[in-house]
Image 1 (cartoon, helix red, strand yellow):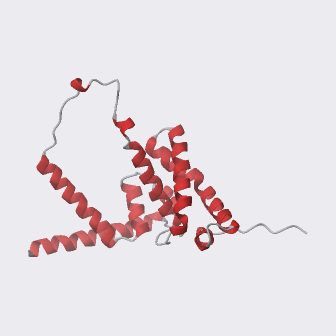
Image 2 (cartoon, rainbow, N blue to C red):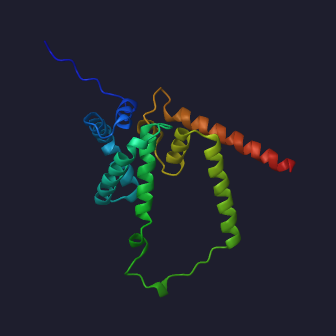
Image 3 (cartoon, one colour):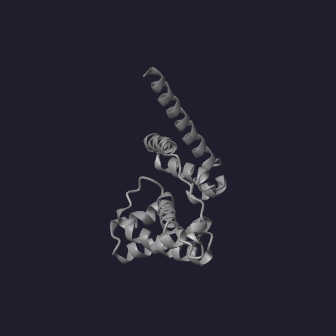
Length: 198
């Protein structure tokens, strides 16, 4: 008589085990299984941003350790994969912004062209960006925001977003992105009409 194949537990089941008691053996095994499931994907996310295999491996380890520490406080307001992607994105952008990446010891500062941006234009761009971010936060749910960010800013393929966010159904991320864009369009139209009335 053969032993039955073990059933793979869902992300939600594993998260529940971790948040119930992260220090128990069951909680630690669940965390290990869950993070192991995403290790390759986190590496690919990091590599896509930093474009350096060694650095991407280091960042992957950082992301997984940070996620493991924060997992007991994960509230489940979005999919686990979305939450983990946000941690990876933030960690990578922080790494890219580190001073060592912004300084080039071989460049003579006197040879660099001085460009001073127009303060009025900078202010307008900042206001516009803040308004868009406010609309995103106000009108889109966490998965919609993450999918739209991945598509527009990270340039992920729709299939990659579907896989990353573990979206089910035939249309996957395509339907999620269409819904998010429809909501944003409606919010922008509503705001524009309010502006015309004032």
